[in-house]
Length: 374
Figure 1 (tube, rainbow, N blue to C red):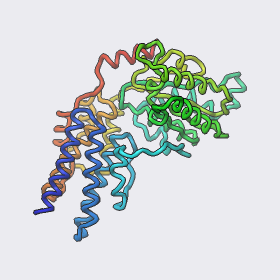
Figure 2: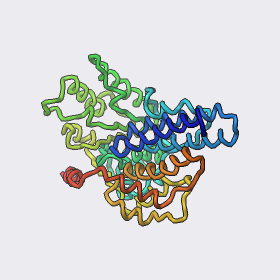
Figure 3: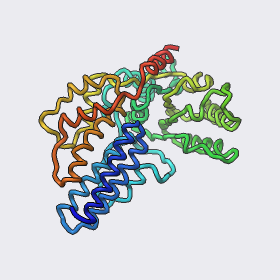
Figure 4: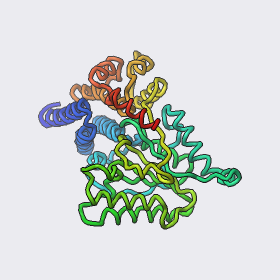
């Protein structure tokens, strides 16, 4: 490449390097933004290129970067078309779209590596009762309250919640603090009430997932909790109690990385009295996660994922995603600069492993264990 081609390649590589640097700081959002912008440049170059092979090559590399974006955001990779160039910054989170319920979450337990005990707990507490209400009636049991998913960041709590809806083939509502919180008086409570009113309109039930619940459910005894936050928590407690009636088959899940911050009232029946610890992946799960993250990527014959799974004890699912994305960026960067492709090799994974460290401390893991036994 010469002239404008050199400038284009340099800009793309600078963005990729910036994304890699952000991953090294565990700043996944900054990495997402950098990779998305690099993808956008590649899509733009593909659109103006007169050479068909070059057009295809740029588009393929742009799609690879968008897959990295979605992987870092915890979304499932999808096939993208060349015409989706403008989705790059949207995928990076630079545009806001109101959340909508999914008729089907598209995720099943089979899509989640490991977490067998978690899956069985959710089957017994939520899925089997919802599927067999007549058995509950026979034994005088009820559906019970909601369930709190807690554990380190990046362990797949959101994916688990989606899988519950997928197993039941029921609508999935995801409520995030950003959907609710407002600077205007009373608007946060009004938004929350509106969301729950929509949920109650599901005649055949739904799975309602409150993500990052500690952001709206922090303990009211803390000195730094404001009066608007207390009002919002009271509103949430009232909605969970079903003061206006709760439809049969309406299941509640919530997730937090800091369960010890929650107000105790949230942990009482029938709110989120059930607790489910989402741990770090074990060795077989790490091996499976590595396979999934490298699927569809050209791999060299010297790959030893079993050894890599052994060497990544203490890594979360998000850490493994970061590891794989870093490894893939090494040959990707070379392809941009040199114009030739090569597969991802063991040396790339080893180099990435030297730079990626577990994001969860042993002290944090012990704290999660203590909370689970309280």
